Length: 233
Ligand code: ABF
Image (cartoon, rainbow, N blue to C red):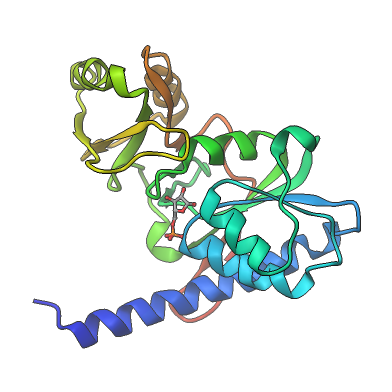
């Protein structure tokens, strides 16, 4: 069994990779920042590190739209104004992490249950910059459980339909999304054709959205390597 010390050093090493990609993301978007610029900012531990980096430039751009309440609070903590998406037009860029990303830049997201807001904010951005450590880089999506956000009264119906599609949906107990909905996670569900699967699942009545970001995948991937380098794809 992994010892606590081994776990802590593994986590610290992964944090260093996340910090490196967060810094690289700041350099990636720096040329886009003007006093008029509003950017989209995601959710999760990698996005949190990006927010911390972005904080060093607070006051030099207009502000951000956040994909979760947690990120909005962190942005405000750094003195960055947070805007309602409805008050903002298109944004030049959205920066967020992922749970998995494949060679075609399709992603599984939503491990933190913020998938719907993430997808909405991403849809409004001209470019999606994905920041991730190399553990997220996969040949085929689906090792990480795919989240599906459902309207609560439809949960069992949607689960039965997902079983017919060959999935093994598990209700994420005790989790309510920022939108008041519930999450079903699909375990051991290899996804060879992410664009088609994203659309098939979204067509089930009662599904709000699923965590496949394939129809609108990433445009740029900043991947933190174990040797400390950041690969830009
Ligand atoms: C968000 O944060 C989610 O879509 C994804 O589930 C998660 C990645 O988290 P972390 O950066 O903590 O690994 O982007």
